Length: 120
Image (tube, rainbow, N blue to C red; front, top):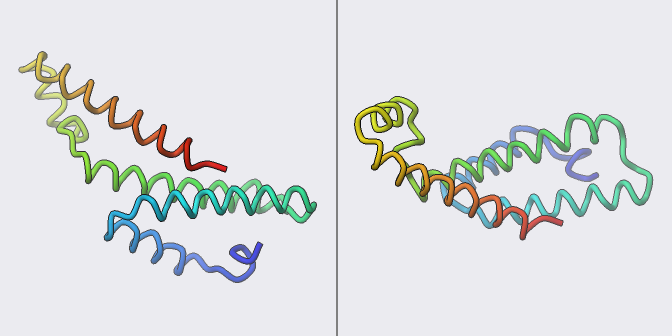
């Protein structure tokens, strides 16, 4: 509730940018856990507002997830992340495309599992 009442979007975005610059995915996941725990507390105490549930909390969560995905892509680059390069590889080198596709799916699954383990 204090983040909702006292926080501002500029500070939130600066925190996201700082995490991205430092490639600090663990900090993002910790903040996500704290947000989920805080939301759970608000619901249990009956202090949750429709605006928080419908708008603010999903926006915070989505921005954390998007930043974590960008960090993960930077740390584990894949040629298929660029649609133009992916189309060229798929058309001209199908065996290489299959290898990159498998690697990309593994990377995405690893991020998903990591997020699930750090969720509230």
